[in-house]
Length: 234
Image (cartoon, rainbow, N blue to C red; front, side, top):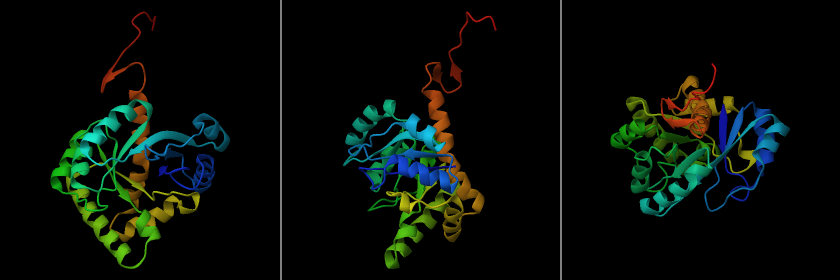
């Protein structure tokens, strides 16, 4: 299972500190998903070796319009294993689910954003995972937390009905905000998920990573098509 984090300067903890906490909590890897205008500086291989945990380069595209997001997507896709789009408006939500180059639609219910059956079908068609962000449930209180729970329940119903791919995260901006998988399962159950569904959402990050690393291989042509060495004796 993997978690997706915002490290310094996007957050308040270094990638190394996140890696230490994640390894202690039983995660197999972390995706560093800083916003594009706040990239982290780190050595993935060195940190992975030190803490025996996979360190994945990622980005969360934050834009004012779909046109701007499209430009950012073109520049970030080739340099990052996981690419997320920060949603929260109907236009950006729609943009994200219509792009096969996008891995995750983040924060779909934030701000004025909404998510409906049309977007769910588009996300499924293009393999875009919709994010269930448990961060505000864990860290908010009162009316804000109630509204967040209501939004997540609505999102879960739509995702489940249309079999749309999804990921689960606590969206930590500091290592102190990280939660072990069993804690995230408990929160997920409060909004109607089963333990298996929450676990599947945490594992989906790893599945995206493995898929995209395969696609970044020089031998990859397109899904199902790979170059082979015809001069090989095997």
